[in-house]
Image (cartoon, rainbow, N blue to C red; front, side, top):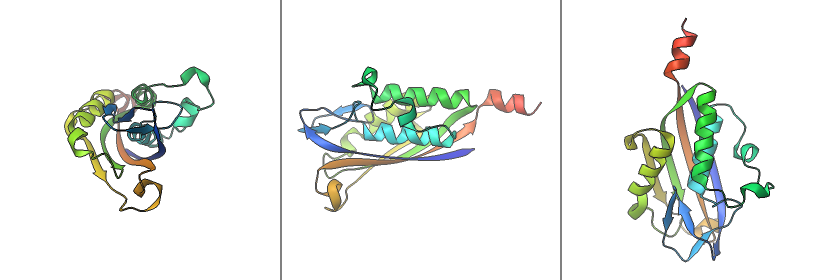
Length: 166
């Protein structure tokens, strides 16, 4: 088994949709970024890549590449899962935290969990999304940004395990 951690933060900005966990939330501000700036999926993506000892999200999706401007973070996470599978690993589970003063995460948690589980190819019971505030501290606490942390467990894929035991 392998464990990876991921973190991301983006500033909030008017005129952009707010996507978290692949779900568009009704909110007056969205996250600024080269992609759709879904901090939750970015944190999970980096955790998957890190657990497989692969390069980080910026290696696969450099912000300087105009060809990927506006790319869906779900697409990015799917690619990370493909890369981990090529390295011989499947996702076991993910635990994540979204840190935001607003909006509240709870009303959207189950939709996020389902979307993330579908993208990772795991049961919903293997995905957790929690929401926390930053108690008014720093840019997140003042409502200028949203951050996310994720921990992912990868397990050796059954096919790779059988091959390595021969």
